[in-house]
Length: 154
Length: 154
DNA sequence: GCATAATACTTGCATATGCAAGCAATATGA
DNA sequence: TCATATTGCTTGCATATGCAAGTATTATGC
Image 1 (cartoon, rainbow over the protein chains, first blue to last red):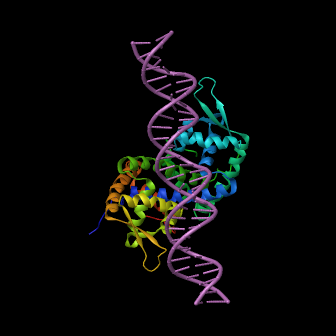
Image 2 (cartoon, chains in turn purple, orange, brown, red):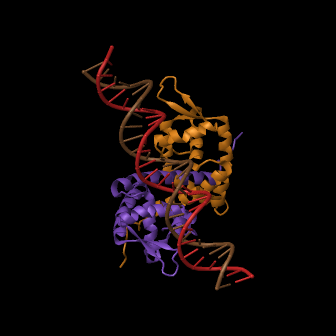
Image 3 (cartoon, chains in turn purple, red, blue, orange):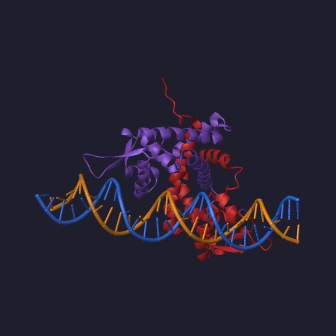
């Protein structure tokens, strides 16, 4: 007789593997980013979002949605980033409620350096031991998970 | 002319999509778990690890490695879980340094309930809009990312 | 046009987590 | 054997983050 638990289905296995493999990669990245660039993975993602935004800026609420964090977290993440000059506050002339976060030239430089590290770490995990067609398969499948999400950076 | 950035390679795109899709699913799970079961995603994973361990228990350092968190985090996560009776402390007679964390009967019940929620959420993301062969492709590819890691729960 | 609602943001408080230092127990090496 | 090193765990401190309440600004409905 076969005992089936709630986790014995393909969907659950995929969800578990997704979370665990992401956790593992994030842990690698986290160490590299803090050691090499002095930024966190979340700060990296914040800069990535800004870099791809129209006018290189977003209101705080929009960043919060895209990053799956609360508005207060964005407020508090931005403060030190403003201090070191990678982002700057811009107010909307038409609606004073909006306080845009904009990436600066220094921010783009920092981002570019961090992207190099990101690529290198991604290379360790994928490039060196995966075939191109496997990478294309995986990226197509993962794309289906984030297409439709405003958060997608790719 | 084509401008290439550091992120324009397949490995980086896969890494980005992996992190972002996992973030999105984790955010869904987090809300469900705290609302329905009163536990965090990390507490769920802790119980999952214990449930699959020999004798249903692990030393704290082993849990820390598998969960990609620090030893102090495990210490502090376990305290309230012990209070509500889902885990219990067991000392090793041969080496008093080891303080095992063991899952209890109540813990297995709680885990089982949470697994049902996990499956349901995984179903929303995968089952309802993916073909079986796509699910099998994805699980095989993700497996390559965690095989070799002691953390793998699948 | 004005009271009320909605929106964007900030802040107080509570929880979560990592790092470094400290403690206790075991292992190692002379 | 016994001083030293290593290992597992805990704790103090700093940082990160969510929720709820508060503030300021704009939108809505009468």
